[in-house]
Image 1 (cartoon, one colour):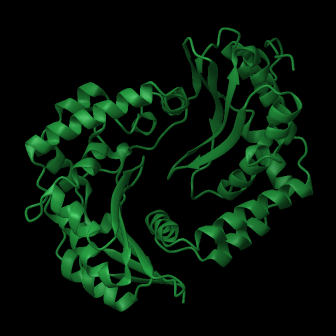
Image 2 (cartoon, rainbow, N blue to C red):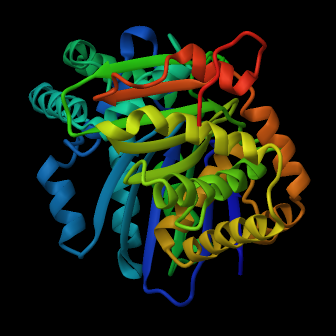
Length: 429
């Protein structure tokens, strides 16, 4: 049947996809506002707002919200990212009306009770502490902070202990009123759902939601790159090496996704085979490409023991450079098959499908048919991938490392390896 889309009079977009083979419905409200939308003094408020969503409304206590959805066997949750915030639930087909009512209540009439706020602030302080104590998590925060230094895109979503403890109920309400407007929101359901019935239900509950969000959109991000090192007395070192990636909207976005799979998208990938299997330099290595609305990040994460630190980065850099010289047709075909399979498998999950449709609506203003995505992938050639790799990996890198990293190559050598400038120190492989 495909994706059906309607727009309410207040500008709210409502979309559904019926999956006749399932009995459940995944539904939620996605807002085009995340940590990038925070002012300097609001660092962490978007994430705190997500936590407070389930702490009571004008008509429901926190226990009411939890018990009502669980009484019907459903589940409810929320998530904050750099550019979006999502509030979502999964229920059986007969309980969609209840789920819509609860989600609408959370968005329209949050209580932000000061006593609940105080408790939730302490919970987030524990999250911040736990992240700091988990090197394979915090290294990614340091990676984005270094890549986009002094910009909201680079800041940790969690905030800092100082900012999180400073927020008041009034500040939460102000942020929500500035950032949450129907024109920046989509409500999506996937599964055992009827479009017209769902639209009417959303209209009843959210048709009166404020039309516009008055808050300014975030500033355009500028990749800067650089070096961050945090020596710690640990058993292993966590290292992320990266470069500026591609935004969702640009031509090279899907090529970047495939390039990431060629290099580190599985056990048959170049990095896994060369770095882990043949040389035994690490116990984990993979690559990734994160797209944002105006930029992106291409990175390689590796975890290694003390003895592998010195050789690890030069070998990774060598493999990245080789990708700019030649990529086999078999490698491209395998990466394309992996990506296509991921798309089709996610379409079998109502929760994954609802999230995918919501992201497409927020980013592109329309659902992107699966056939169109597959067609885009089919047109990417090995020549295009090698050209992308040669351009991408010759730019200024970002290197972050935590752990026993005394033998890690100096940043100047890492940077020179990619640029190949005369007189610049080169790394031995």
